[in-house]
Image 1 (cartoon, helix red, strand yellow):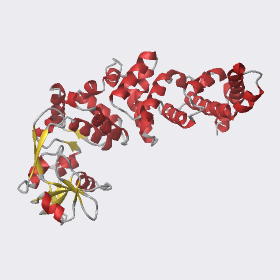
Image 2 (tube, one colour):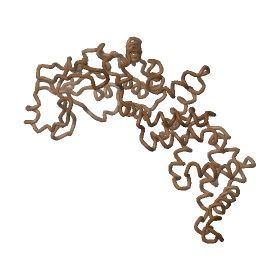
Image 3 (tube, one colour):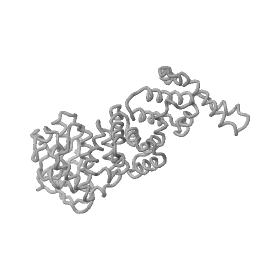
Image 4 (tube, one colour):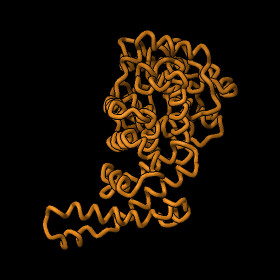
Length: 395
């Protein structure tokens, strides 16, 4: 029995990057032998075990054969006679098809180290085309490794997979998993560019493909710039998703809201991502005009977004809005006014107003009037162009 570190741990070590997790392949062993050594089984589709001391994953060397459509349409064979080279051959990219033995010797049968030096994503074998998830993985790797490009022959193979309908068999949960990971990388725009280049964008995310297809390309460029600014600001996933979808709402009204909602629901995005994207698309134009809104309009926005009850979510909405364009006076002023308006409105003692109201029917209107007055008082300096005063008041 021989064990080898494989995949990402080998790749990242060669790139001088921190190695977070190590995966192992075991050659020349049976499940019974691993169980006898104290390994704990975890795999359902094929034999994967956890090391009794380190907890790292050890998988028996295996081959795979296409047996149906989609990423689950495979038959696996794990046996003691499966070689390391056969196991590495089934992997997606050459840079992920390298291994090190327990003495540290590099095993690189498919030129992964050469492609690392050339900064290329190149498929290991034609079997790449059998798994549509690999298109998503290449796109995600493009977001992570910004200096890499997709080898022309690999891009051609990805395009053929799209044309053959392989991506149509991807399940939403798997798509979102890869999207979420790519969005959290340092250059998430490159993931969407890769998907557009191979044609998968239109099949998987037609809502964004519409932006890409606009004649000028301005909306697409703005969407990609926004998501990269979100990444540069280390914003959480919900902010990045909302920022990406923001362009769907630029002057598009209810139709854009419907598209954004349909997209998030179809991908089964988490609730926080769905909600924030909906708010961003619905309020896109209002947020852009925040520097010119009067107190009543600001209160309307706070009420529509439920900011008084959920200020943390409103803060995320403003974080996304801050990334939708480069810093300028209007954007800075508008965001400061929104923060100041929320602070002023929340400072109003609604309970005291309710107790003093002569009748229940007047409570809501009196609270609203008090909040508008409080906001007017707070933002008055900014209305005359004193952005510094607003920024100071907003904390």
